[in-house]
Length: 268
Image 1: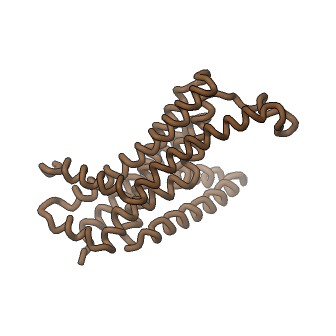
Image 2: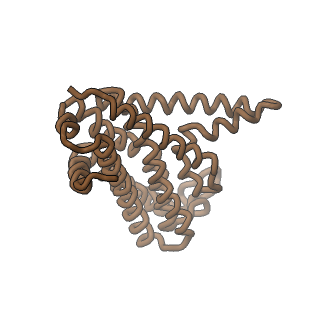
Image 3: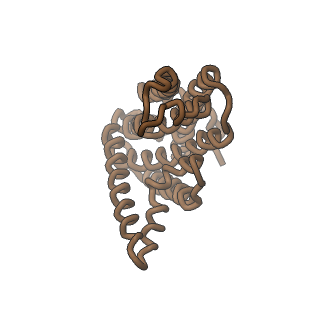
């Protein structure tokens, strides 16, 4: 059962999360990604038949529409910069407060420790949702206004919606790392290095899976964290149940380990 004043705890954490440099930067970059997608589409339309790829004019390759613009924005949003900013916000919320000794002020209060962690996670989740909405509204809205509303909006909307639990998976991993270190930069670098290692392992397993009687290796690769965090990409083609199952396992394991660590850690 949540403490009586949990909503006040959540609002306080949300205010801190949104007003930190990481939160402000995440929202601004989300807006910039949407604007850049619109600008890129406008440039491609302006070039028209003058630019070509493999001998085909751009106007024959691209579908100039709001759907295409918002799709560009989503892929750019999820590629690199926004995940780093979300990790930065996660590190600031845990490792940063631990280092600055402000976390101790929360933990000495007569509230369960798990509720403190829950309030922080919920605030970070809201930040993720805000960035998705900002990118979607700017790219989709301006894209539809400039290039038209034709196209399939439902799959795109599912892609944006699916990016939210994918972000939560990244936040869960970031929280676990943030409770093991006391430096915000170490949280970002640690998670990035782990995901790079995960990518290398998945590539190796995929290669091994192509060998006779080694198909299991490729199946294992589909359940790994890197693949799970990309579950949102299913909107581009076919949704992968293995990726979603891996994402659910990643969130549960990371949050369970993080909660166990948070409940037992000493905060000077």
